[in-house]
Image (cartoon, rainbow, N blue to C red; front, side, top):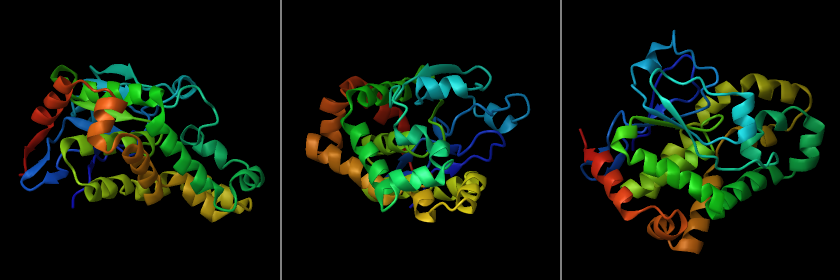
Length: 266
């Protein structure tokens, strides 16, 4: 199987091109048109030529208003910003609070010890699938990806693992990828996450924090994706029902998405 190609940008965390991912015999995602990443607040558009040459036309920001205000994106040259807030302004939602959760080991142990950290993230994934607000955000992202004038599209959350991870899963499923391929792509961000959060995790562990809690917070786990897929299957019977009745993506947009983003495997 093949995961997204890591793009070695110096100033953007977890930048990955979904192009080249297998969609079945003889088919793959078109390269260079849909990319995922972490936030662009540290992007250096002057000196980071790796991003500039991608020709990004649209940046889809999946973060909350608080996240955007505290770390606003620095857009690539010529790109426009499109906000598609998945979580709303709920400060208690875990994917929006990763570093805060590592800041106080005693309080984090009280709240998330004994397996509750993984439980919390899994439940967040379930709620994202069932949430009308999240559905509207992901519909907006997918309709943007289906618009030739908007591509190349870069979509992101804070670290590029949870909200962006589910967005990538949705896109790949809609294009015909198997769930095994989707799962491999979903989990492939973990090495980057471990490196990016190494200083925060080390400080947390040095202060007596539980390594299992840290792992559940900074990584994605198979259970997170499986919980989302189970919720989708139980409520809508799979990706087609979810796209039609949950996300409410127009059929014309789905056709454009598949016609434009599915190409012969090279």
